[in-house]
Length: 302
Image (tube, rainbow, N blue to C red; front, side, top):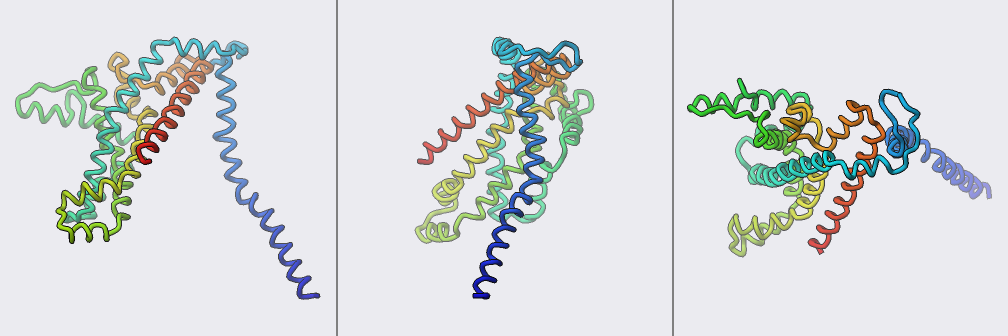
């Protein structure tokens, strides 16, 4: 009896320790999650229904859906959303295609593997401030690298960051150089997980390198491509840093994304309530787009 009692007591203590230690391990995460995500979300949602101002003037009174109504009829908000969509279109396609090509080049075993991997992925580790400096070195009108090369062959320089027809392209180009390394890494990991037996069987059947790529490699990468596309679209729609530092939304507001307009409304125009309302409208659009993307790709996969 004593043995069974000891075992029962030990199991009861272990069960009690499990019930106590589990919440203790999770508590730090829940605390940080609540303080830095849940509380700001709830506070921002409440603020969107008030006339809160950064200056502290006014009574921050409840105005209902007035901010939302004003935002939905604000042509500048829709204009900046259009700029954001344009940037997304210009950056997403090359960020998917270039990453795939880079991963394929590394996967086939080019000489100097470590150098290729480092050069492809290293820019992704840079901060936005460093990318800003690199962008200025490349696109500056007077002494930028591109204009220096153009003048060396007798051509006129281009205002890459100060002309409307070039500014968005320039920002998209530097963004592709900066962030393609992450997608490259995802594709490379997916390529390394493709079973070698598939390639061996195809080689026995007489399939050449191109045929193996189209019949085996690309179909095996379909799920990774869907993941990268969804992540890249969402990341590009949230663009702010590089545009704000390179062009400040110019020239003449032609590159200003929605997040910069929200920032300007809240911290330059001091209308925190209105900025919060636009933030939640943009969040709702992102949520609808994400659900639509997932359903679309799920149907394609089925």
